[in-house]
Each structure stands twice: as C-alpha cells, then as structure tokens.
Amino acid sequence: MPIPMRKVRVRGWFGPSSALWRLAISGIALSAAIAQTPAHSPMEDEFPEGAGKQLVIQACQKCHTLNRIYDTDLWTYQWRDTVADMVRRGAVLDNDQAQTVIAYLAKNFRPSGPVRLRVVLPEGEGKAIITGDCQACHSLQKIVILRRSATDWDSLVHTMIRQGAKVRDEDIAIIVEYLTKNYGSLTSAQTSTP
Ligand code: HEC
Ligand code: HEC
Image (cartoon, rainbow, N blue to C red):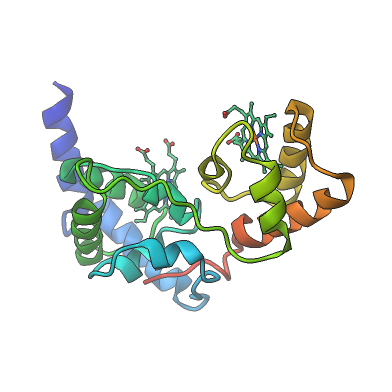
C-alpha cells in the first residue's frame, strides 16, 4: 500500500525529533558562516509575492535553477513530498520554513493555476545568441533547468552542435561563458541558507 506508507514517511521526515530535522539544524550551523545569496536571477521576479518566496529564492537554487520549480505544478500533498525530498537531498530549511514553502508553492504552483511557459534569460552577450541559435529543436526551458560546470557546459554546447545546432565558431566561447556565469555550479560560498 504505497500511499499510506508515503504519508507516514513524510510526517517522520518533518517530525520535531526526526533525523532529517536534526540534519537540517546541523546544516544551518555549518553553512551560516558562508551564507551568501546566489546572484540575482531574473526568474525571481516571475515568482508571485508571498510568504515563502524569499525562502525559495534562498534555499532552492543550489542544485538546479528556479526554472525547475517554475516549470512544475503540483497538488499540496505532492509539494509536501517534493519539498521533503529536497530537504533530504540537502535543501536547508527548518520545519517551520518548510511548511511556509509548501504553502507558498501549493498556492502559486498548482495544476489548475495559470499556465506559465515564460523563461526570462539574464542580460548578457550570450543571450541573443542562445535565443537565436538554440530554440530550433527544443524550448529554452530545457536549457536553463540544470546547473552545470564550465566543462560540462562546454561539452554540452559541442554536443548540440553535433546534433545540428548552427552556432558560429566565434560564438561558442561566448555562450559557454554566459551559461556558466548564470547557470554554473555554485561553490559552497555561493550557496545560501534562509
Ligand atoms: C541539494 C540539492 C537540491 C536543492 C537544494 C533543491 N533541490 Fe530540487 N531537485 C534536486 C534534484 C537532484 C532534483 C532531480 C530529482 C529527480 O529528477 O528525481 C530536483 C528536482 C526538483 C523538482 C522536480 C521534481 C519533479 O517531480 O518533477 C522540483 C519541483 C524541485 N526540485 C523543487 C525544489 C524546491 C522547491 C527546493 C527548495 C525547497 C529545491 N528543489 C531545492 C536537488 C535539489
Ligand atoms: C538541432 C537540434 C538542436 C539544437 C539547435 C539545440 N539542441 Fe539542445 N538538444 C537537442 C537534442 C536532440 C537534445 C536531447 C533530447 C532532448 O532532451 O530533447 C537536446 C538537449 C539539450 C539539453 C538538455 C540536456 C540534458 O542532458 O539535460 C540542453 C541543456 C540543451 N539541449 C542545450 C542547448 C543549447 C545551449 C543549444 C544552443 C547552443 C541547443 N541545445 C540547441 C537538440 C538540439
């Protein structure tokens, strides 16, 4: 009976004495010294105002971009599972903060809500090249979901060229630098805690 088991597990994760809760506390203590907000992403402005928005901005950009969340519509129970899963993976939120984030996401990113297909790319030299060269086969959304290292962005752009993307040789370095700057892996000094 997978559904009841799932419920019990989620309650356990967020219970006041759960291992996860203790892990979150030690995570806060550990990273407090190096806390720093990631570079401003224009996608932040697309998120509706409300309690929980700042927590999402601070806790949810370490491993993937905000587009990963913007792209997802879930019912409340699914957000509860997803946020618990993210905390298990390393998102730093205490129990109250997690509840605030769940309520915020469930209100604003629900399956019956407004359709959102918007992707706002940060300004920069690479923006026009990507907008022009990279949308022939898939959406921009596909490009900006994950964070990658400079090496991985470089090899990905070359893979796309092998797939058929028409990118001028002199533009390759510009796109790789743009993608790494805006969607690169974050060092621990760039990741933040609420
Ligand atoms: C420590 C790394 C990490 C942090 C921090 C993190 N995530 Fe994730 N997230 C992941 C990984 C890894 C995946 C991909 C999991 C998969 O595809 O199975 C993911 C996937 C997702 C998805 C897609 C899940 C789906 O069912 O399609 C959503 C939505 C999401 N994260 C939301 C969040 C939110 C909200 C936060 C902040 C509370 C957050 N993430 C913080 C690692 C993280
Ligand atoms: C000629 C077609 C084509 C063009 C143009 C193209 N791509 Fe792709 N791209 C693909 C295919 C095929 C895949 C893999 C299948 C899929 O996931 O849809 C893909 C997947 C991706 C992914 C996801 C890869 C992953 O493993 O998560 C990213 C990121 C990406 N492309 C970036 C770009 C960038 C940046 C550009 C512009 C330089 C670009 N693409 C242009 C065909 C293309």
